[in-house]
Image (cartoon, rainbow, N blue to C red):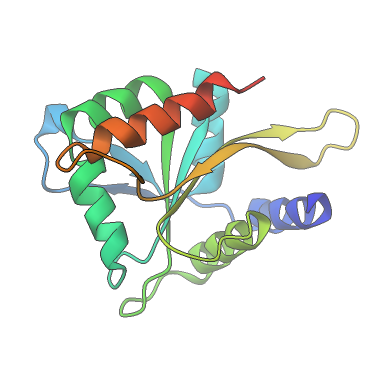
Length: 171
């Protein structure tokens, strides 16, 4: 997996670009910034010492992805948690809209590096440059999906407990 990560990061740096996706449904104070460019998210992650929270989604077709956004990501508890703990990265795999070739390549490379096989999937990680080899490496912290075993109407509580468990185990 490490060799795929190195290859992916090499291509990523060749095709880096700035991308930000923001939610329209929230007020300005409650707006989360979802980056679409890994390099930008990684730079912010390094500067803030917060991991990247990569959301693998099929924005225009995945029902569970939309449900996760509605039941967890749109809740005030998640919004506050995200602002304090992570840098948000959306990795979209739409069926009915076209992404730029660079964004498509970036998302596919990360999907391969993390071996994502279904949606929604969230991976939390840091991206570091190896001082000796000058290559970028991913330090995966853990993954999440739609929360399991939650109290109905309180999906965000279970999701945040699972996310905090991943963050508490980081080295």
